[in-house]
Length: 522
View (tube, rainbow, N blue to C red):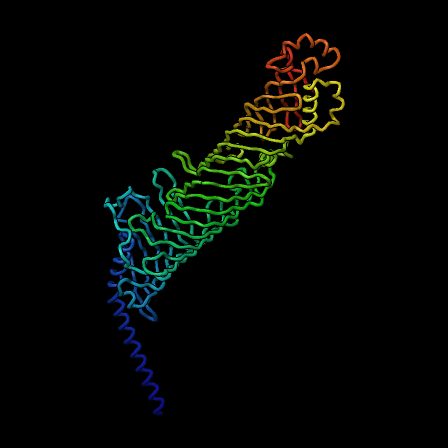
């Protein structure tokens, strides 16, 4: 009986003690709550040079100290002309009471809910948003956080130029770890890239925070970009993977890396090729403009070197791709495989120098692409048997051997001289000017157009051959044309006559003009 009474008394005493402890802890929480609130607000304002507003803050000391807050807003330098730099639905702080009251405040872990981070545009050099020159970028450590978790973060970087779209990122997972006061935080992040859609995983370092210019805060790290679907860009297809490293400031990040698209194709041809690149670039984080210097692109047996930029231009939504493209290690059949249907009509080594402009828009890439440059093709040969036959006939006539035309089908003519010319591409039509090439016994100069989708050719020019015009034919035509030989002998060659190439790639037509009448050569 005594034992039972003793147990009851002990239980009652414990309950009374627990109740007293709860009352004391509730009193202490109520007592420390405004103090902790004031200290947190002051520390955040000092560290981030921002005006802080917290709708509600609660302190719970049992079982371990936890501080929760709701409706938080930070305005950088109290600016009202731009959105708040930070908005939060809420946060949870885990830290000892002594750490919360120490200087600096030391937080073991911080969980952020609904973080939206909006970085303002860079202010004029030497001035802060308040107009104070040489503002301190290291106001002193008022707040130290060991670990930050901010899943579901939205990052927005405002542009420097009014009218440009801000750069935006949805960060699904974000964790940061402190390695010491005044030093950068280590982070791991996962985010979805908006266009092309794909997953980006990144690890690296961020900070220290630049309170005078948040966009100048340093960042570095490594990334992987996977399953990026290029079909969102009308006219091309493929799944892109990229890896690389970056380093710089939020508003100016240097990036180096590689990309791999094993199934790249253009809708006008639908030929799949493996496209790989190695690149160096600088990204302006205030607007997403990217400066390429250079990009080394490789597909099949061709290598292209590209320099230029991807930028927004006033008055037009989207980005312009503006590049200078060169190659001395390329093949014309590789380039044609990307652009045209069926098998390439020509093969051979190609050198190329061109400007490339791809405006933003909804149409196919091949219709929006604009090129202007020069090219040369060495050791070229036509892959079409029909074209080979027609060129064989031209060459045989040019050498004054028309009686041997019956053997043209048996002869294998390889055009080994250089093709050279200037070209432009726009609205899906290729225009060639000052095009020159040679055949055994002949030289051709011409200009004209070729439809990449229609494959219709329309070229006109001059055909120069060693033989006299009468020697290019047999029978009565040869006899009749002997009187005209002096008329067509020009510029030190036996014959110079206008020539026309028309038809389509699969069914071309060749003809020369004699006495203002076109004579088909087949």
